[in-house]
Length: 218
Image (cartoon, rainbow, N blue to C red; front, side, top):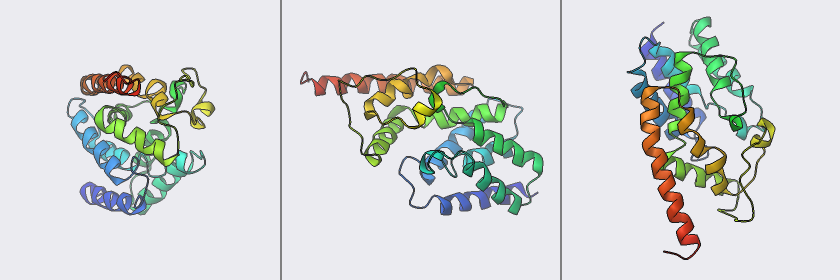
């Protein structure tokens, strides 16, 4: 396998596939996760850099939330593409497992697969869900789904099942408590934990300012 060429072909495939995607799940999200993953992987050796690259690039090739909750489409699309690139079966299986196990799913999802490569890509993806970019993505998706910004009468649900989480339609600010503020303590790697701590503080400061403005205190 020419790993460099396959990686470049994967980048081109993902860019074309996600053309016109919702702003928080477009090519630029993939690119940020790809770069985050390469940064984190430096401190996680020994690790398969090729699997990290392909897994990061293909992890959201068909996010189930845009396919009526169908979680099988992403792995199928990834497999079809990788087979066209004559990638070995062991690598394809690894990428499928990464796609199947990377998502948060309400925090009530037990992983039945583990690898250092999954740990790296999962942290890279979660980092893009927090901090300044995470806030922007959160409100962008809330607008995409026509959700309220905030409603003090609707409290966050911290004990959702996987199905409840997938179909939740609560105000956007609730998502901070239902997912974003929980990610810091669910990071896998040393580098991921360090970066997440800083981005977590930024979100806490944002929420303090948000409530102060909402309540006419600032």
